[in-house]
Length: 368
Image (cartoon, rainbow, N blue to C red; front, side):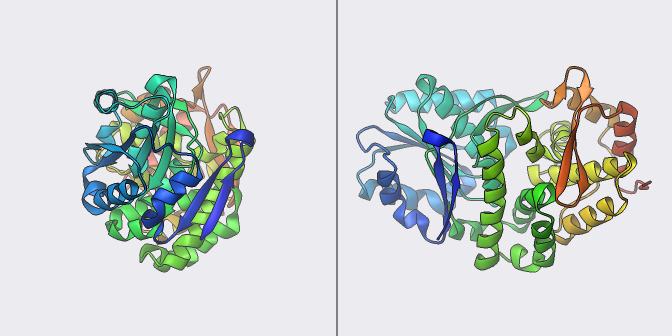
C-alpha cells in the first residue's frame, strides 16, 4: 500500500495506491465518513462497467450502502452538458440528498464528469474518485472537474475536492496498450515539470511501465501523484504555481478540440503538446537538448510527437484562443527551462506558436 496526502487543511484527503483495493471499498468508504443512509451514485462508462461495476456494487452492498448507477458512453464525448444533464436526472430520480456521495468509477472523463455533477448537485455533495486508468492519476487528484464545450475543453467546471482517491492497480490490467501509453504521458509530464530524474526514470523503465509491471506502476503513480499533490497543496485554485501542471496542454487541448475529441486520446494530444512546448523553449533561447530529450522520453513510451497533416494550423490557433490559459489577449505557455524545471511565459509571440504548430505535423521538418 502506498499513500499520498493532498494537504489542504481541513479538506485534506488521501490517495490510496495498491492492489485489491476494490475488494475493500466498503470499509474504506466507512472509514472516511461516507453515509450508508443516503444513496450513492456510481458514474462509470461502458467499458469500465463491463470489467468492474458488478464487483464494486457487490462490495458496497455487502457493506450496507445503497447505490444507483449511471453508465455513460466511453470516450471524451461524454464530457458534455447533454450527458451532465442525464447524470443529474439519474441523481434526482435516484433520491440523492445532501448526505449522498457521487462515486467516479473510471478514467479522466468519468472523473471530471462525475465530479462536476457532485459539485453542482444541491450546490455540492461529496464525491470519491476510484480511477481505473493510468491517465486518471493526474485527473483524479486536485479537484478540477468539468465538462467540455464544442469550442473548448474543460471550459465549464468547478474546483471540488474528493473525499478520497482509491486507486486499485488491478483495474489497470484491462487497459488496451494505447490507453496505457496515453496515461503514461501525464506521468512523465510530472517529471518534466519538477523532477528530471523521475522523467528519466520513466524513460529508462518504459518497458516495465508499458507491460503494467505492478512494482514499476506503483512507484510511478506514487511519484506522479506526489508531485501533483505538492503543487495543488500550494495553489489549489490555479492562481499561479498550479499552472505548471498544464505543460503541453495549451497545444494539446487545441488538438483535441480540432480533432473532435475523438481523433486523439487526451494523453496523446498532451504528448504532442509537450513536444511543441519543448520546441518553443528552444526557439525562445533554451538549450537545444530540451527538445531532443523530451522527444526521446515520449517516444520511449510509444507516444506521438507529431500530429496528423489534415489538422489546420488556423483551426488550432483559433482553438487556443478559447483556452482558459489565454489571458488578457496574451498566449500563456508553460515552457521548459531544462528537464525537470519550467517557467510560466505569458506573452509568447503568436507567429512563433504558428511556426511550431506547422512543424509539429507528420513529415514536418523540425527547425531548432
